[in-house]
Length: 463
Image (cartoon, rainbow, N blue to C red; front, side, top):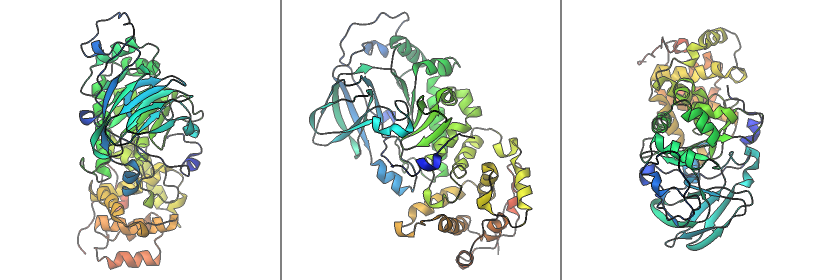
């Protein structure tokens, strides 16, 4: 279980913006660098022969427009935005002036600093945003940090030229090899950070932990990024979003050495892993076999607020965790950890109240039983129903969220699910019961609340 002290407080804080870009259309740098070349102890690959200098001069980028992250977050009814960052592989020292020339007639956003890597989640103000106008711009930050771009436009690219800063390891899926990463780590032994960019994910971690957990576990970074991309697309499917529909800003996995008392957490712009917890992102075997933590945190980035009712913050997102676990061929956590006997013990109680269940895995079993009964299209349909709602239809309090959820779930199942929810102690009110009955769907008679992963019970399909 993730440690997330003061999580409810975080959910009330400011929402922010985010950005993704796939490598194939992402920032494409060309280097014109200066400074003395460092002596290499190893043979440097052809890719790195043009990336050996430390100081950066006139690095060119074509920054793709992937849309406005606020609009994606709002239209998908999510709590959090994805990352605004498109990495450059350039570190700005504290108070170092960075010159950025922007071509054309469109503005572009830039950042200095990495959320959670350079400051705790309570110190986001240390990460400095900038709006760059066409022409010459000079930016600097008293805290320093990695430089990122963010193009809010939908489609096209904005070209920039950056002068200043220090090169750091930036591994890009489809461009570099494992040996390239090893060479980068040797070439930049004092780098501020190491970043690895996939099609749908971005990793930011310290050189020491990349060496310990990625290189040390003999993980191939290409295969690691592909696996993280795969997990992202599995969660896309749960949310009912095709590759053409989904927000393609990055899911950002960040090492955090600033937030004490935490283990892993999700917040605006990122999922974060305190200290050695980043191993579950960097070690491919741990990500596949023991990756509940990262799957869970990425699931937070998907949560739709209109059906996140009372005490569901650490429950609702585990639909995504269970979906990834299943797709990766791992046994269900609900079975492996003996959750179902606890579920059946709860269901036999009198005067049940779902809101008061303290065990988050018992709670998520109710949600997962709907997936077991109605198949993998149930949650895509449910997510879509909330995206299709007008703003005025969205519930504003916990009770309204819960009542509407029972109606929308019945629509997604095309079945009257009132018996199921009553069995679980969700307590539909008279108005909800009448609205579900008015839908005209068959009444549920099958005892789907007895479903387990190894013995799913399918519903009746006729009246």
